Amino acid sequence: MVQHAHALRAGLTLAYNRPRERSSGIIVHTHSHSHAAAWVVKTAVAATLVLVAIEFVAGTIAHSLALVSDAWHNLTDVPSLVLAAIAIYWEHRPPDHQKTFGYQRAGVLAAFVNSLVMIGVAAFLCYKGYERVMTPEPVATGAMLWVGVLALLVNGTITVGLAGDRRDLNMRAVFIHNFGDALSSIGIVAGAWLITKTGQPIIDPLIAFLIAGMILWSAVGIVTESTNILLESLPKGISLENVAAAMLGVPGVCEVHDVHVWSLGSQSCALSCHVRILDMPTSESEIICRLLNEVVSREFGITHTTIQFEHTHAPGDFHRYMPEPAAKKAP
Image (cartoon, rainbow, N blue to C red; front, side, top):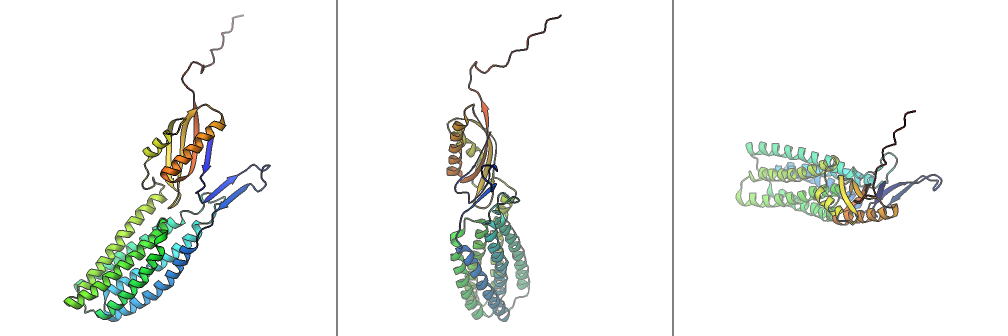
C-alpha cells in the first residue's frame, strides 16, 4: 500500500481520478503569486542598460579600467536578469502530463547558466587587470568618481528591490550579482579618491582584481548549490539520519528505510521512503501517514512525500505457517 501526500504548501499538485468519479481525469491546482519580483527584474534591466552605456563611455574617455570592468560586470547582469524573468514565468507554470513536477527547476537552471557567465567575466577582468598592471595608464579620477556614485545608486536600488526574494535560488543569484555590483561601485568611488590622493594609477587595476574576486566568489557558491539541486543531491541543511529519526518518533512506526530526499526546486523538497508498521486497517495507517507528513514538513520543510507502507506482525504465536500437506497413501 502506498500513501501519497501533497502538503498544502506545495504550490502545484497533479491528481488523477477514476473516469466514473470525475470526467476531467486530471485536477491541477495552482497558487497565485506576487508579480513584484518580475516587475523589479524588468525595471532593473532598463536601468542596467543605461548604466552600462554610461560606464563604457566614461571609462573609455577616463582611461579607467575599473569603470570598464564594472561596465562588463553590469553588462552580465542583463542576460542574468532576462533569464531570471523568464525563469520566474516558467517556474510558476502548472504541471502537465510531460512535466509532472512542473517547471520548478527553471529558476535553478537559470542560476546555473548565470553563474557560469559570471565566472567567464571574472577571468576576463583578471586578464585585463594584468595587462593594465604591465602597462599603467593615467586615470581621470573625476569622471571615475561621479560615474561610480551613479552606479552605486542604481545598483543599490536594484539590490534593495531584490532583497525580499532571496529564498529563491534564481532570485538569490540575481541579488548576489547586483549586491556585488554595489560593492564594486563603492570600490570605484574609494579607488578614485585614493588615486587623487596618492597619484598611483595602479590602484585602478587592483580594484578590477577585487571586483573579479567578488564575482568569482559569488558565482562558485551558486554553481555548487544549483549543481546539487540538478543532480538531486540531499538538500542543504538536511540529514538523512535526522529525517529517519524524526519519522521513527511517530507512534506506530517500526522501521524506516530506502529513504530519498531531494530538491524539486530552490524552495521545495521531496521525500520517498518505505515505512514498516504493524498490520492494521487502512483507516489507521492513514493516521500514521498524516503524522509522518506533519513531522517532515514542520521539522525539515519537506512538502512532497511518497511513503510506502510495509506490514509486519507483533510477536506472538498467532502468526503461523500452513502445515505441510498430508502424504498420500499408497494405493
